Image 1 (cartoon, rainbow, N blue to C red):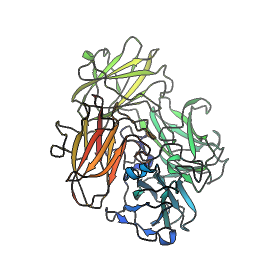
Image 2: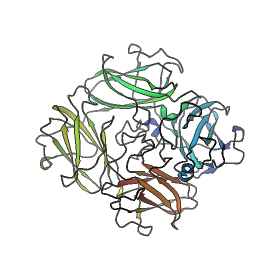
Image 3: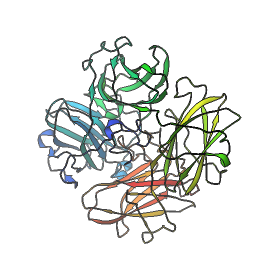
Image 4: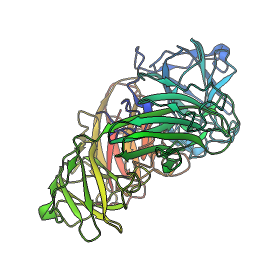
Length: 566
């Protein structure tokens, strides 16, 4: 499975092996050339907009103070789209130097009516509440077929900017459901008694200030249910005064007892994963967590049968009697404070692993929460793994091949629990000494590589091929990003590396850089998992190189990373 992008799982949330993007992470496309189209002169208004096509990258520059670029594109009613912007990732040096970032706006066919806008600095609304970095539109639809306009300008028009590339792609959403309550109205499905029936898939709805939207879903058998909302990530709707900042609440069959709630899983968009073992009808409520924003939202809902779940076999309370588990398997058991359960799985260096736990935090009716410890093949050394958050996921990178152990312990009381083990992605682990262009490792067939900067001032090189004019992004998964860490449910991977990545041409010249800190980050909204990402448009086809370092020149056994070219 390809990571992060282009898998329609209804997102990260809805598949442990995919990082968030709701239905907006499906297989995008549009046909035509993959090479960039350059802006034309005089495109500072809708009347002079540079034309683009779906799936074709557009390349421009916001050099001068107050610069603005317009692009025109034909879009169809009923089709879903995403727009990905590479600006701080493409030209971090210049955007960072002036502490600025681009503002992205989608205009209606008249070229003046705003449909969506990301307002980082709060110049036209209450503003984006997270860090300074690229802001994308993950998922949107247009009201009618016609020619629409995309505008790029500096967020702070009193400062200069830098270069950018953006690509508008189609999204494939099958069986999209429309909320029955009319757009910009309230009162139709605001209570449990008037709850609208929700089916697995993606629902397109609308929130009005102060209202509730309530949906009912029925489970015929024990299941895991997964919900993810995309609203805040899509920007300010139609020139409103604020982003819609949502919260979701899950209620039991009585419609009153709250089982779970969340308001920030992916930036300010919520997600819930819940294990429910009692069949019946349950209720999901969408409301505002704060602010005054109206806006559209996309609710992804998936349910997963518990058929095929393994049951633990006692006595598995030591590494010597550990019960085998494999990637993709689920297992359930019971544990008490004095009797841990131990599982063993075979891993390969370069595997990025996720273990999702289910306990009192996300399994209705069980007694207590659990602790999870990961042990290296020696059965003693703890493997650093990010702590559980709202979705109860541990994420960690394997730096050696062998048998790893999962040790489950109860916090206080005896309790039932369940685990889901998943390899999020695999990668080719480095072969030392790869500290120069001449000794660079090749990225594997999936465009991935991984390693550890074990000592101070260490660096690693990887080689890859690229085609002239076709944008390339190299993503680095290491320590959680500092500017937003918008996909915090899955980020960090147990790493303490603060990465500095350079992309070099065959002669060794740097063509792009990205780093962990400073003023402007290299995260995205569609692609919020990486610690940092560096993008570039190759001037010629050939071999290029990724150089990975620590921005503070510190190395350790925990300074691990995975890189991925896309």
